[in-house]
Image 1 (spheres, helix red, strand yellow):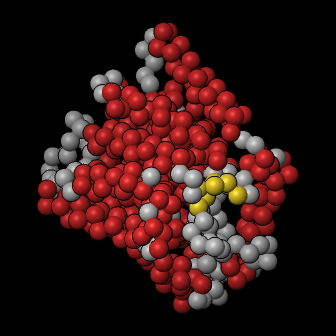
Image 2: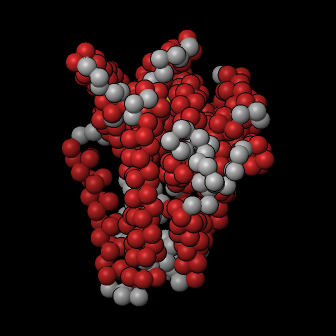
Image 3: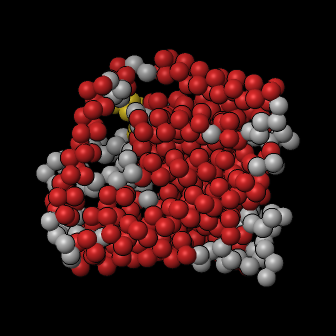
Amino acid sequence: MGLLVLSILAVLVIGSLFRRLWALTLAMLMYPLEQSLQGSVDQFRAFPPLANYIVAAVVGLAAIRAVFAMQRPFFGYFTRDWFVTVGIFAWSAVSLVWTPSMPQAGDLVREGVPYFILFVLAAPILIDGVDDLLELSSLIMVFGGLVALTIIINPEFNIKSGRLGLMLTSTVRSSPLAIGELGGTLLIVSSLFRSPAAGVVLKLARPVAFVCGAALALYSGSRGQLLFGAAFALAFYPVARPVRSIASYAATAIGVVLVGGTLVLLSQLLLEGDMLRRWQGDVLSAGVQVRQLNTLDLFRAFAANPVAWIFGLGWNAFSSITDASTEPYSHSLLVDLLAELGLPALIAFLIFAVDVFRGSISLFREWSADEQRRAAITVVMALALYQFLLVNKQGYLWGAGLSFLHWLIIVRVRARTGTAGALPDG
């Protein structure tokens, strides 16, 4: 098992030395690949940051190489949305001056800085234009499927309290959220990916990625990842395929039914015991109630302090304010932006979100007649929305670097893609 996982890492690292999209794929798969390595290779379990250091070094080298090899590399990089993103993170660091949650807030910022550098500063420059999206989708599907398979067949990963994970130490267990997130990602990519000229490897990888993704999402016990992944796989399936005739429409409808039916069948086969218990009504409502109480506690403190409407309560103020739970953050990026960083920060992020949405629609309209590009753009749109819902279900700002990467990819591709699929003149 260790040899297999190391081989996946080695292939991605070597490929990244020659092709920037392989490095971008490595960054996007970092979290689940890290867990697979820790579950298979003693050195990675003994020194948990090792995989992160390797990914950071590879992506950093690939980014430097891209700057010198790419035509006008910073066109579409220093956009309004990039400055908004950097500004939000910088403001959260400034707010440490008045946050009531020091030193916990400071620890979260320090832990998040390397991921900010990786996902916000380095990785976005690895994407060039719309033609890269098809290759990126195929790489995520192939290597994501392989990583998922290594987790599923590895006996070191076991189910505890209805959630798949790995015991890193006698008391520390890996996060099932990253595993579930990969599962949802694979559901989306494998369902929406389309390339009539795909070779044998891609044709085999697609069903493997779908089944492994569904299994991971189910076994991880990550309800949001499974629900969002399945919902977007179904909802965007007709969007990814142009309807030119009744036969084409019928084929698309059948595809939706098959995707949905397969997910239902797998859920019936795989869910049992504690995993099934997590989907019962009382457990679901309890989880929702905790999130609501978290939000209400933070909003009450925010509303009672008019100065906070502009400057915010301070990054991670939630952990000092709430009595609803022992959670270290509210699990909702939008809530944190408003209450902890202030109304201007939330407005800036919403402007960013609107730009991402408009960029997605613009790309889709421009390439809707192109079968392969249409599907690739749909994949990225679905993944961006998937990340948006996840970060408002379980996330926090300094842990949302991967989500911002998805959104910045759309902004960059839109900026760099002219009507002919290349850099605009000028």
